[in-house]
Amino acid sequence: MYPIRPLLISTGSALMMLCILGAFTAFMFAAKNGHLDVVDALLSRGVAVYNRDVKGDTALMYAVHEAHPDIVKQFVQAGATAELTDRSGVSALALEKADDDRDMIVLLTTPQAPHH
Image 1 (tube, rainbow, N blue to C red):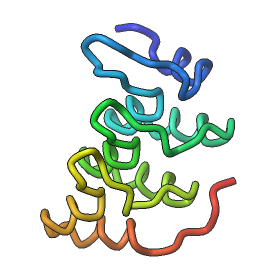
Image 2 (tube, helix red, strand yellow):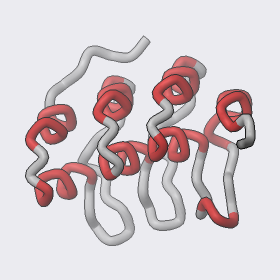
Image 3 (cartoon, rainbow, N blue to C red):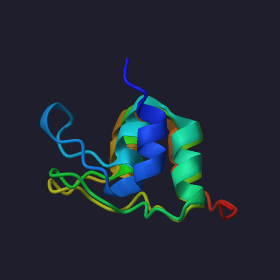
Image 4 (tube, rainbow, N blue to C red):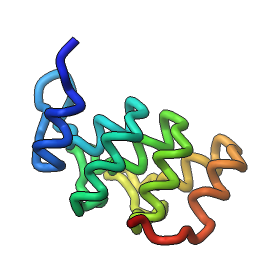
């Protein structure tokens, strides 16, 4: 296992993990894999939450898709919006409405106190 957490934190969202990861930013990798500590560290360093991968997905979309509510909450507190759409025109909110995941829908639609 590679020591990915220190690498992700030190390089921030500019890190592009090409090849098998498909152009992920550090945020996307952390969000997809449930690394709340990495998400918190990147947010505290002011890394933007709106970067997109080649499909137009954001880190919030990965967190929603992989059902990581604590990470979704952190992104929403940092100003991420659930209405942004990928290249197919699908938003994180639309995905959760289709899945009828009421808890995640509440997280995505309820204003949160800003992340500090």
